[in-house]
Image: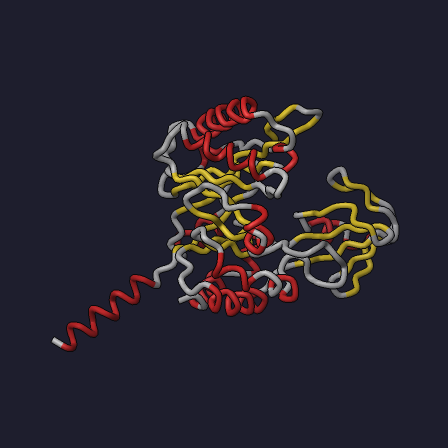
Length: 326
């Protein structure tokens, strides 16, 4: 009888510690490489959070941008969550009737892209503030009226956790904590994930009243500066390889030797590209801090699903990061 009880407790504990791994897909043309598919299958990651489109305001007109194409290539063995990114300025001075109209347009646009593919969750990504929270939260409440069967979630920034008594708690089922991009862009430290920055926020996690899942960064980018002022954030790094004769490298900094244009961006002599990336050690250190604040993370997502990111943080490293939370 004692052995049966011990076995039951062990099985119950293991079940409690089961963690779902998922990824974000953030490109406008949907396509999964063989390496990306293989990684999803090996990790038993059946759900992909896919950005369907952006919503922005230009000249007081609200418009969709970066609309997803080729979504029909998604294979049926993968579940998906449509993600809609909405700029904070979209909410400025927006009347209630226009918010209702926006709800309807977004709802129809999501289903137009998804076509016959089934899903049960919709996520909204918006860096709302004290000034815009009322309109964003009203939008969420109105959107839920279109179909109460959908789970509605939002991304949550660390500043929204620490100052939730000011920025409010969104009326959603769950939040997804973005554990990255928490400090200012700079040339002296890593802007994606910086221990000094995140330690200023993590003590607030236990107090946050909304259930949180965790998003960890695995991406890299280039910070393009001119005279110490930031010109661009660049997600593709092939410019460093294609035009390597145009750069002088000093560790993670690449100084432009002569003017050139690539992908519509002008690179001027003496401009500097700083390469920032995330490695296994960075993430394990963050995980150690996070497990002390919230023990039971049920879902961990990685931003974002891209072959170049998986080449740096492969299956074994991702499993090691997941096991840190077990």
